[in-house]
Length: 127
Image (tube, rainbow, N blue to C red; front, side, top):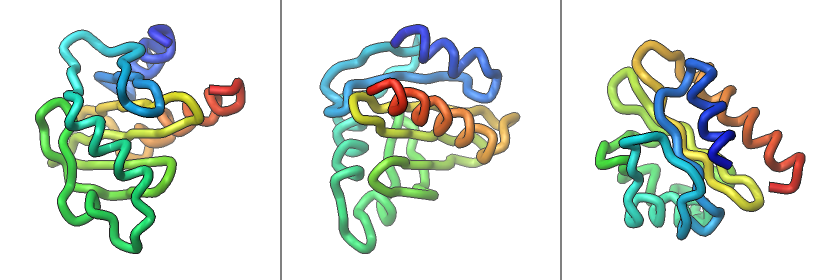
């Protein structure tokens, strides 16, 4: 999975990324200096299980690597957040959670497409 984290960053659309198991209890790969805390990933995992009409994470936002993000999208597969002109795209597959940060220079849709396509690929090969 280290290769997949590196491939996200190599696109130039993502500047930092981490890959966790689907429960969020194990880090499979992470960019140097990009640390998602156990509490942060727990909130992400909880958001995927939240089936309420208005999810808690939608009203409260969420944190990744100690930065707070406003929730733009939250469903059973994806969580998007924004802070100023930068943001995060988080995608859950069968076995993994991809956490990707994009810089100000990347358009949100481009970042989302990059991460969602990797998520589709991983689902297609059983991850």
